[in-house]
Amino acid sequence: MRKWVLIGPVLALLLVLVALVLVALVLPWRASRSAPVPALSRPPSPAVAPPVVGADGIGDPYFPHAGNGGYNVTGYDIQIRYDPPTDRLEGHTTITAQATESLSRFDLDLRLPASAVTVDDRPAGIHQDGGKLEVTPAAPVHAGVPMTVRVDYAGVPSEIPGGPGVPSPWVRTPDGAVAVNEPDIAAWWYPSNDHPLDKATFTITAVVPAGLQVIANGALLGGPEPAGPGHQQWRWQETEPMATYLAFVAIGNYDIVRRDTRFGLYLAAYDRGLTPQVANAARTSVERTPEIIEFLSGIFGPYPFRQLGGVVPDAPNLYFALEDQTRPVYSPAFFGSGQDVTVVVHELAHQWFGDSVSVRHWSDIWLNEGFATYAEWLYTERTGGPSAAQTAAQDYVRYPANDDFWRIPPGAPGGGAEVLNNAVYQRGAMALQALRAAVGDQNFFASLRAWATERAGRNGSVRDFLALVKHVSGKNVDDVARTWLFTPARPPSPPG
Ligand code: ARG
Ligand code: ZN
Image 1 (cartoon, rainbow, N blue to C red):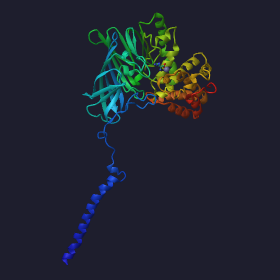
Image 2: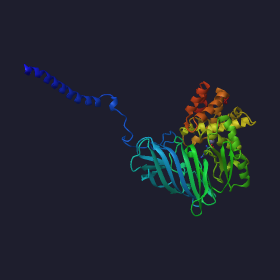
Image 3: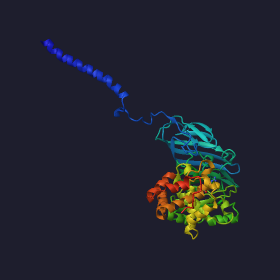
Image 4: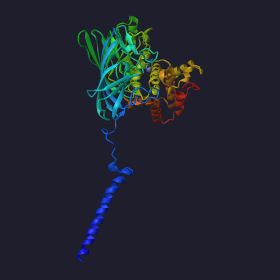
């Protein structure tokens, strides 16, 4: 009897053990094969994700090799030494950035030859080809972790062409040089993630022969300061996010004019090599900068930066002006036959449209050039001249329907040189007049102001702007946009 009494519990125990062994065997098998089981499917931590090679382009449809993938730059510390007689530039630029993915290699944009790169103070492997500087860090960099990249480089920027058969964008002057162009200039004097989508802060230090001046963006931190025998250095700093093409340096013999304004320190520089007439016309025009900023801020909202000014180099081969952040650079050609306030209005309007709010891709260039040109028309309208509608109508009839002018749709002008085609400017401004007529003055100006203030320091696309106009006005502007921005033909009638 006792025997049989024991068998029951022993059997039960055996059954339980067998069941436990089965469960132990089957559960992991299920877990590894079935759909996500929360406890077992954590996302891989950045440290263990296999490192990848950063893309050799940021994803711009018109300029597929502009900028790079895999990281965001937070700041550039550019340090150059420049010798005007030989045009030799020696630089070391330190970039602080954050990887957005784990990287075994990444690219920077640089045309000058690099001699050494460190990543977090450890020597990195480098290879340079076609405007790209490939950097292979000693160990992969981790996503989300700040990194510091120092690049040493040297060369003669004016010897590096802008493309096949295209001269260098680096402009030499009789006693110095000026780095000014769009969209390509950064790679001729510093390494970068060269695309407006990756904006960053900048400090720019230049060592030059004693007696020369150096002007750059933002605040003057120091200069002239002693920097070894026969040399002086100048230090500048831009603390608002800035697109790479808007960083500039001008080196030469300049007269510098400074004064405090309610928008910050005004600092303008006029090359001493300009003829007295040109210098005089340049001053008469550029010295109106604070007044024009006051005018524009009344329309577009608060001036987005803390310094203001302008630079006029003695550069006979420079045929354009550029809206360099806080301090546009003007070709002296604008002032060859007297003052030119229009170009000052144009470049200052870019401080809101282009510099503070930057294009997302280069195909969005209408947001810069159409708007800056329309600002010229507004200035005329509000200073006793023809209305913007009248200017638009005059421009419309200037170009007959079969003129090539109408083949470039400003909302999608095409890559290469078409990005800065005249149609982006003129027809681009007409497009704004057409939008203004469609939604009414109040909605139109509210949209411009909202665009400038809500997106200050960031980027936007043409589609984003049109969506904003629609949101502000409650009106469908698709037809106006299609006709004026996206159709490669002359619209049937002048705008508004
Ligand atoms: N954004 C400049 C302007 O407002 C145009 C620069 C033209 N650059 C050039 N390389 N053509 O006028
Ligand atoms: Zn412009």
